[in-house]
Length: 243
Image 1: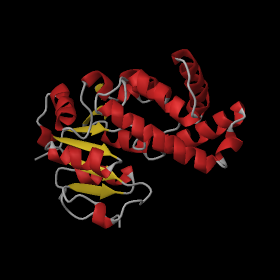
Image 2 (image 1 turned 90 degrees about the horizontal axis):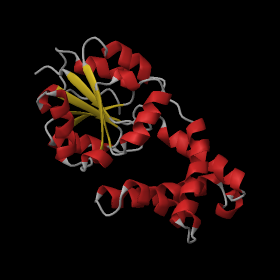
Image 3 (image 1 turned 180 degrees about the vertical axis):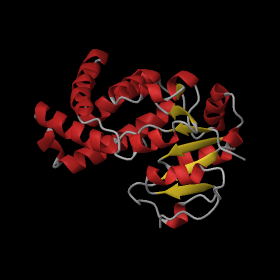
Image 4 (image 1 turned 60 degrees about the vertical axis):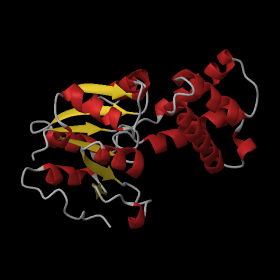
């Protein structure tokens, strides 16, 4: 069955979130005079990402709202009590440095151009529309997508099937006519496959072993591989060239 639409993850799929986050927290801590407290930029980033993942899991589970998880990330990272306004101010100062480092991956615009005439495009992100609209507009690709759906507004997040099916419903297409492209083998890859979409997992850094690759999605190293996978005569289940 032909694939008629591609639904995209944003962070670390289209947008180089890891680099921006690393450069943002390093520059922010330097400006705040806090970098020495963490020993190194690498250790600071490790702790920041660990806390971010933990707080995001609370948000995804519906335990806290989007703003609260941001405030709690700041409080836990700094290890001190902060009012809401203090936490918001600290995070806002971080965002200045983080946003200064925003970039698309270099393979993004070529693949969007290559697929512009043949496939429809949408976004499904485990973030909020406020965050991702600003990001996609700043990066110049907002108008490339028919719709942008985010967990904060949907009330359901990946890997739940409901998130992926909401994207299909927004496109008015059945899941088997939609491909999902994301960077996480479980949240994106397995989630999309179990919802009935054709799942494409982009493993840019080769950080995962073959043992961790779910069988029902296709693993690629670059978005340059995507057009061939989505071609009507493509054997989508064929092994990837990436090993």
